[in-house]
Length: 255
Ligand code: 13P
View 1 (spheres, rainbow, N blue to C red):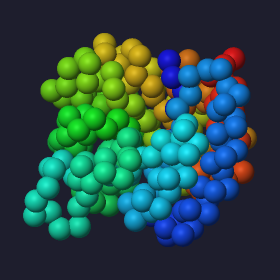
View 2 (spheres, protein in one colour):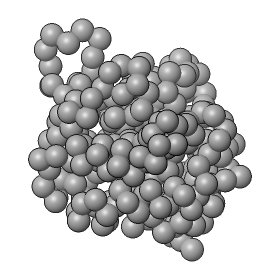
View 3 (cartoon, helix red, strand yellow):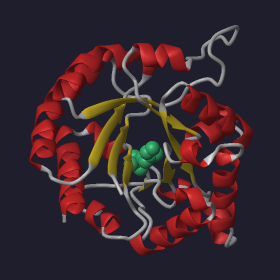
View 4 (cartoon, protein in one colour):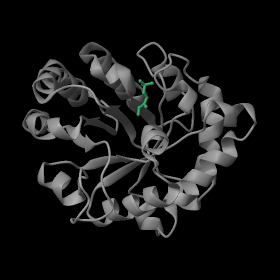
């Protein structure tokens, strides 16, 4: 199983700031990856407006892939304010985060919309990173597994096994995002085992944990059998922290 470290920068960094951030971590991440013997993929997902600015520096590392944080399901047309898969591909994007809880919560993205986007991304040759997760209320009601399995099955609806094999999933408990209250690693692993078990084709699909991942807690997640990496928000905006997260993942992948 590949280990994946993905940084989701959310709505942070102008193009100029993004270039500075990449300059601060990309050569160091490149060195860590050159010395790693395990299969590890590193992705960073800046805002759309910074994709073009950072693409050349990331490409120079030869090892850090460019991701986007969202895209539309149609390829072009009258969708004011939206960004299509061909636009992303044109900038060198190879991964796209779909169904992040902030998209679902603040922008009304439904399971059906996420499924349409996943299908388009796959058809266009992008790797979707599909995020699922429960609210605090759902967790307290004992509905975590039901919620994430429902979201996962909906995202996979209509996909064949080969298509599912090209996905990455991310389990992000909403109550753990940006709060500093990261989910207990064993508890996250149990939820992620439930996600993996909900479809036979997920056997070899990396499942990432996201929610207040930091250098001091990442190793505990990586040690879990169903955790194949991290989807990281705040800590991916700090060059030193991001390099350390990649180092931890490389150690886990080769150990
Ligand atoms: P934080 O790492 O800031 O909690 O964000 C997690 C996240 O939402 C990544 O997509």
